[in-house]
Image (tube, rainbow, N blue to C red):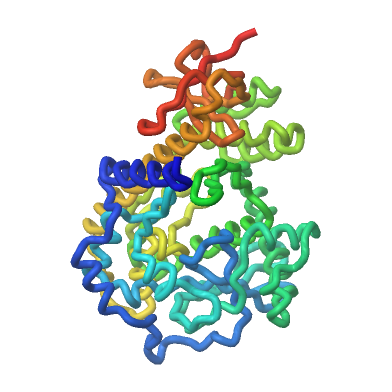
Length: 489
């Protein structure tokens, strides 16, 4: 078999899955024609744009990421507080509302990350170059500037446009190893004077924000993503990509920044697209899971009570916490986008235990963030809101649907990739955790490799969160099928 035949098969599967789920795998001709006219990044933002190019901005993302959406930097403030500045790529400066490139992005509404290939929301010439906050390059951005008090509260904040330069392109794993004392300082940290202290301050503030968010009820969950590993063009493994300290740094800064953006738009009497996660409908099953572990949760959904339970379980049984987290994630259900009009009650995000939350910090990858950026820029300029309420309501629904479709594609290709890896292991046994149980079937996740399959024999009585031993019966790469039988006794 040629070395790249497996990856070619997966790419064909991914391309077909995109089409089958109402997503565009290829850039439309009119958008491609517009792209050819864009030769350079947008740099002229007018007199209202501040010059912050001298600050020690850095990006922290995956090792291979080039579609860089945000930078961060810290500055001391009074009374032990710290200013945290989050710079977000000004995508709207090149991708204008109603243009062919904008219309193309509005179809998929998100980049789709499959085990075979990435289908970027914006063409790579933009998302990984001209609209990316690329290493060493001057770019326009929208800055969320917030003061974090010594006890982790968000104090004064402002939002403005600025020119910035990324001084250090950093990666999660190497930064986390360094912060944890398990590895050397990454080369870009050593190369830029003051960057080591800059990152340690940011880490300290992020950990303070984390403690506050936990106290307020943010759910602590160990989420494991399957990362495709290729060797010579051929899929070699699907490995667990776990959270770490550097990811937490970005996560808690983004939560804080998105809250600031939501409140800013509300204060300016602007509509906004909120990211909403309602109280889980399957709360009784979460209560039952807690009971099997000797814990009691209230009968009515309570984020703070659930947060406390999860923290205790992580401390008591860290080896089993990933399985419990996966079960809770499935039972919480999916978040969605919703229009919020000025003065209207906010629905909030159950998992984050916040009432004001939007998506604004990843405009190269998510269309709701582009919409929010346009709303911000209009509010800053005192201009007319570029969307009417019905437009925003329709866009919120569309973005929610397409996000779900993108996840379906990612799951399908991940299943096909897993089936490809497992096709020589028929008859072997694996430890798994039940991730879905309904009339449509019972599903289980194994970890080596990370794979989801259907329990076709012995599924009776199983429910989400149950640990189970299964035997691999069959695989089908084209359909992404992995069939297991429950092993009893």
